[in-house]
Length: 233
Image 1 (cartoon, rainbow, N blue to C red):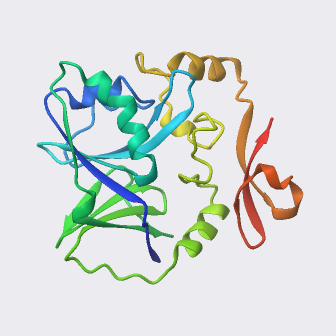
Image 2: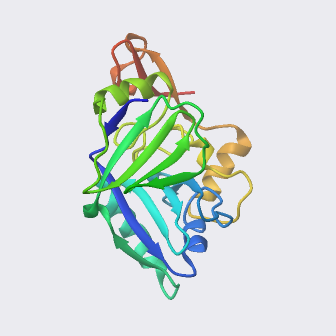
Image 3: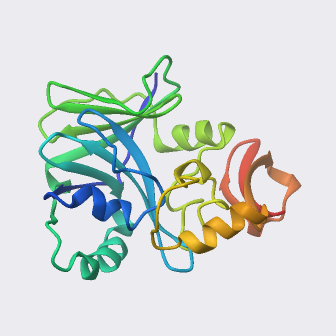
């Protein structure tokens, strides 16, 4: 169960009675039924269905902790802040109080839940992959590098911010189809994503290929023998 640092991790705390409905109206997944102790991914998109960021939601009971990608934070806030208006939603940045890690090759994790122990919160984000948020004074054993993690996720076709998950692509193209709920209500970008799904015309898709089999311009993550690429269908 290797653990690597995630230097670009970001954590924010969202409070208020309208937080879940606010997030639900701005992102691709259905989150209104998220319960305390659960974790769920969702993706914020523009009106043109381009990805702003993929986030992970921790339901902490009295608030929602949002795990996101630091370099995308300003763009995300620029997108959501004007839309808060009179809703009961406040957002604070908790990044400086924490360190972030990814734990991969995990066996038997209960996807969609999280656990907290001795200053570290572990989210079982997807099969074989955990996110760890640890307070600054909590020691988390690290036995892998970010390069090790990216090599592993290449073979498992897992998209990542700064590589596949960028503002150039919509959610289906960069491998975030599981974040796009098939039957939820309106959200920004829904019309285009629904049309793509209904017509079966996604334009591009994320694939794992032999590094030399695709044009370099299509490669998003280059591995030792395999690479991830977003290719035209």
